[in-house]
Image (cartoon, rainbow, N blue to C red):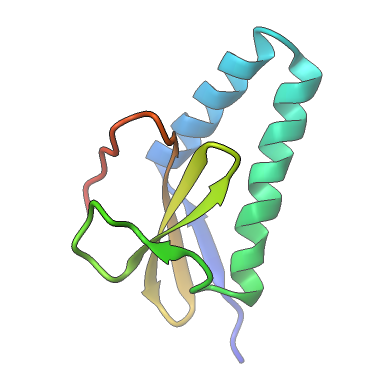
Length: 99
């Protein structure tokens, strides 16, 4: 089995920064801890790349999501070895992605 490559897109990286900034208003420690949990969740894709469910708003079977608390980690399975983390959004927000 070949190694999985996971790329965090610019949009997803910006989402991470926004999440950290928002949570750090209350606690920088909790913000860092939560961002770490997001990366732990993403790491599961190395072993189980299709473990996320299909995103209901998008009619594209290569787009999946992992859930962490009220956040959606949206990713695209590009091929057997490549995954792009597309967005990381709170579930109360509208999903805005371009594929």
